[in-house]
Image (tube, rainbow, N blue to C red):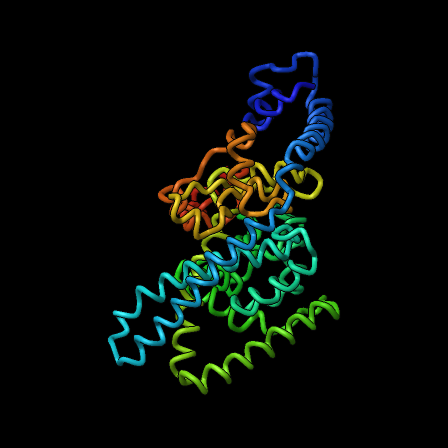
Length: 376
């Protein structure tokens, strides 16, 4: 099997291959599906071998990223505190808060890489900076690492939803749900809730508590983070005032959290996304077809730590963010994934349900048409 075949195979769905009779010697669907799975297994192994060099951490790049992220973020905090103490209008301070929110997203990407153990070669360094950036982003290191690992293991699997993902119902599940559950789902998927109240709830409230499946290490990371945040609150409150501290912290977190949740949303909720039931789910398809390549302007790509190149990240989570662009540039197979633009991504806000029959995300408005088709 030639490596070049992978490019053709990955960008052509099974039905299209059949129509083009790419493999005429395969006479029935069952044989073709068996061949498909074997080929994916081979291609995945070869793909992992080819991306292996990009997994190597670079401590110089990591340190420089810490410097060019944490230093400006700290300076922005000082500037915001100074401006507020001058009794200036909040609208004058707002641009500084917005900029700090962008830097907070970049800090979260560093935290994210530390959770994957990819930012530094040293596990101790990843743990230290993971805890440190976790405090800045109000996120407990080990608890989030556990939840995020589950997300990587189940992304695109319809039978494993609910592990660190955006709540997504199928059309049939929504139709058969109770009115109360439908209302709750509609509220959850409303952009004002999803991107407004959602980040505040998730980062400020939800992450202060452990889940029922949390282990000792995860619970300790929550207690440690909560204790550190309480200490910061007391010290900062005594120095700059509790009102000023909470105003700054909540404002930056609200804006940064909104950007972060949007990025997470668009990474797996877009037109053409891959979802499948457990029996047919494949991790490579979930990575290359179920994770987006969000093509952002260079400045936004910098602030978001290349996380828009998400299909590569899901193929190999141990590639640090500072190597993702290089990996994309040097491996044509990843360039075959259709880029998602900002304009196209905005339409994804109205794709609320998974239509299993047609294998695509659909809007609430399309329900009547789908129900009519089902009756016919």
